[in-house]
Structures are given as C-alpha cells and as structure tokens.
Amino acid sequence: MTYTAPEIAWAPLAPIIIVLVAGALGVLIEAFMRNVALRRMVQLQLSVLALVTALFAIVWQWVAIEGDGVVVLDTMIYLDRQALVWQFLLVVFAIGGVVLFADRNREGEDAFTPLASVAPGSSEETVARAKGLAVTESFPLAMLATGGMMLFASVNDLLFLFVALELLSLPLYILVALSRRRRLLSQEASLKYFLLGAFSSAIFLFGVALLYGATETTGMREMLGLYHPERHTMLVLGLFMVLVGLLFKIGAVPFHMWVPDAYQGAPSPVTAFMAAATKAAAVAALLRLSYLVLYRFAWDLNWVIWTVAIASMVFGTVLAIVQTDVKRMLAYSSIAHAGFILVAFAGFSPLALSALPFYLATYGIATLGAFAVITQVRELTPDGAVGAEATRLGQWAGLGKRSPLLAGAMSLFLLSFAGIPLTAGFVGKFVVFRAALEQGAWPLVVVAVLASTAAVFFYIRLAVLMFFTDAPDDTSPRVEVRATGIGRGVAIAAGIIVLVLGVLPSGALNIADEAGVLLSPPVVAGG
Image (cartoon, rainbow, N blue to C red; front, side):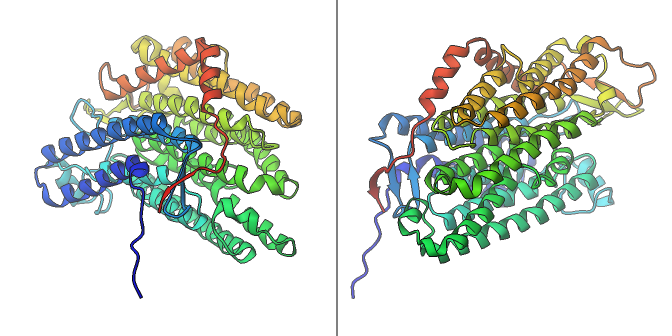
C-alpha cells in the first residue's frame, strides 16, 4: 500500500499564512529577546510589516483570481472574491488595532499591564511598573486572532470553522484581561467573555454534530446535496445551534451579555480591534452559511433573524440612552448595530452580499476612530500623573474647547453611527435597508429606522457635551487631552475615510456593489 502525499495549493493561503507565521515568530521573540524596549519595537514592526504584506497579497489575489475562486484543502476552504473582501477589511482593522496597541501616554506607559501574571495591586506589579516592564505579547496575540478571523471568513467546513473560531477567540480572552488601569474590572470582563464564549462554542459544536448526523458531512456547499427530508428536524435544530454560536460573536440579543463588560473592561485599543474585527469576521461566516445553507430553510429560521434583529435594535438603543460611561454607551450601540446588520439577512437578498461588507467597513472604521479618541482623554491624579481613561460622560464636557480636532473627529464618528447624511454610516445603512426592502421586509426596516432615530439622542448628547457644555470647575479627577499621539493620528485617518465615503455617496455605492460577488462554485486549485 503506497501513501500519496496530499497536494495543497499554498499560494491562495498566502495572506493567512503570513499573518499566522508573524504571530508564531512573535511568540519566539517573546521567549528569546530580553530587552523590553527592543522587543516592543521589533514586535510592532513585525506585526505592521506582516499585515501590510498580507494586504498586498490579498490585492494581488483579487487581481489574479480566475473565475469565481479556488478550492483549497479538499473543499475545506473556498477563496472567492467575497472571502477576499472580508480578509481585506479584517487586515485593515488589524493594522489600526496594532498601531493603537503601540500608543503611549506622556509618561511612556501603554494601555497594557506591566505584568499580567500577578494579582492587581500587588507588590510584584508595583516593582514591574517601576522597572518599566511591558507586556509585548499583545502583538503576537493580535496577529493570531487576525489569522483566525481571516480563516473564519473563508472556510467552507463547519468543523474547520470551529477551529478558526477558537483560534480567534482565545487570544481575545487574554487581551481583554491585560488592561493597565482598573485591573479587576479587566479581569472580570475577560472571565465573563471566556465563560460565555465557552458556552457558545459548545452550542456551536453541538449544532455541527447534529448537522453531521443529518447530512453525513460538515461541508457547507455539500450539505444541501446530502439533505434527507426525514432528518429535517435534526438539520434545522443543528442550523439553529450553529446560528446561535455565530450570533454570540456578532453580539446580538439575547447573546450579548459579554459585550458591555468586555468593551468597558478591556484596554481601549483591544476594544477597538475587537469591536471592529470580531463583528466583521462573524458576519462573514454567517453570510457564507446563510447563502449556502440557511436560505433553503428560510421558512424554518427566518423568524430567528427577525426576532433577534428587532430585539437587538430595541434593546441596544434603549439601554444605550441610559448609560453614563462612554465605552458602555458604545457597547450597547454595537448591540443595536448588530440588529441593523441582521436586517440585511431578512429574505436573503443578493444585495446583502454587497451591503454587508460595506456596512461593516463603515462601522469598523468609525469604531476604530471612536476608541482612538477615547485613548487620548485621560484622568489626572492629584499629583498630576496620568491616570485611567476618562470615560464618564461628564468628564467629556468642554472637550471641544480643549481639543477641537479630537472632539470634531469624535462627533463625526457619532454622526456616522447614527446614520446622518454626509457620513459613511448613512450610506451603509442605506444599502442594508435596500437589501431588506428588496425582499419585502419593510416592517423590519421601519423598526430599524425608528431605532436609528431614537439612537440619535445619545450620540448627539455626547456631541453637545463636548461643544456646548463647559467643564465644571470642581471636576474630580481632572482630565487631560493629549495634543499628540498615535491615537490622535488613527482618529484623524478614520475621520477622513468616514467623511470621504459620506460626501461621495455614488462612489461609495459603486464600491459596495462591486464588492458583492455571488458565492458560486469555484475552481479547484488543489488539495
């Protein structure tokens, strides 16, 4: 008996391989490079270089791709133009996140604890801070999470999808726990995220097992061809459980309980990366599952999409109104946006294939920019040292006078979240609602419009605080706004993109339409 070695087409996997290899090299750098300052610089340069290289590789694949795509690893991975669009977005979000990881305050401290393995407030932590130690593991962890997200957006096999899910999730659980300030809050958020994530992963895997029992395959494209009507109930139940696992990652109601705590407790650069990239990766996977399998069972499962979408929009909007913390307000805003995203899935319109990548692009860029601004607004201790981020709404009063540029950028992001015309968010919501209306889901669009209208209140409230409210003289603790910094640069860059996409709506719509490539059977490349 002879063994035949499998043939694997490695070239289509180049962007993913580049990112994952950079993450592995980062782990080795952590083990062997002792100088903290040098290690931090090498990790940053390696991460940015790998991500930029992966970005060019994705563009090269888009130009060189033949037909509808290629099959890799014996149909387990399908690399079509839809997958490349999502990979491009994920790498862009990762670049923004990694750059924010490198931001420091005027005292030279970044957002991460100097020693994650000790108890908060312990003498060991104090000594580590005095010695200038730094947790540079955040860079390889971000790279491994990004590689998992890129796989998550490309795989066709549900069991492989679970592997990608764990690869993207485990580094995020760790990153959430690494905040330099408010360590207990950060660790509590990480524990909640981990426990709820473990439950959702178990539900997802149970659903995969049921689907295998019903169809004798875990491949999405092959599943319908092996469908047996007598196993209909088992298949629908399996699809429902897989859907629950994906909705957890999107942060939709009632699978949202981790979102407020994780957003508030995590370091803001991690929150920015996680909020933009994780939601995009989950939507990419749900989009592929929907248009390969779920559409056939629309009668059985469409009610789930409608119910979760309405609950997310209403619940997220109402609770965001009563928040007094900026990060928690944006967390509940993201839950409402999860509902807006699900509106596009109503009826499984082909327009959703273009609407969703564009919507996640506008939302992700604005999210990166908003949290970049948050990193620049800091509390001051009584002795004038830089403290934690100033996230209470009252601390943002008068920000427009102290830093008009940052306040203007934040207002632009808030208006984009609200979907105000002349912002990218307006175009994003327009294409999502258009996709739903094409399939007659006008009641869902009415709820979405009403929720968007109500959401304007808490977005405008923060803008009014920044520009039309004076900071109280007895503010305690005092607040400092940085005039320079990496976060400021990320916020300005994100603001320019949001503004350009908003003031050129016809060009933005053309970009969205060109990105929507139907998921049809691709060309086999090998393996």
